Image: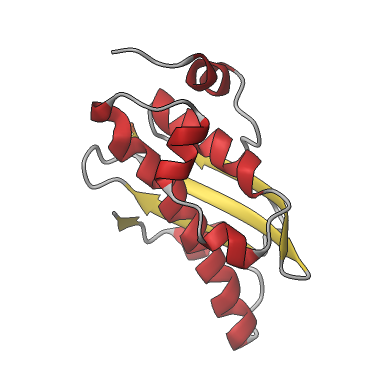
Length: 140
Ligand code: FES
């Protein structure tokens, strides 16, 4: 199995890895194929993602694709970020071995879940979510 240089770079030096105390939205998803979990935090100001962090119990490919995805969406509007697909992230990394494609779905789904969480909270006037809100993991 061959990884591209970009994948190795993002795996060895992940961008935006960590947690966020004052996130506007948080999305957590699990991978139905391997059971690994991904959480993405976004900070939103005026409809723009001004900051983003990820935390994962996934493999190297999950780390690399989340790192790249966070890099790509920082500064995007929510509407732009909603269009991000795992294929776009994989392409930006020069591809992934076929057996690892499912790992890249985690970043896309967790990002979309975080945006949905932000929109739900805005609509319902709820306080920003906390870790305790996030115990129910949806498997994709
Ligand atoms: Fe689970 Fe890659 S094997 S995310």
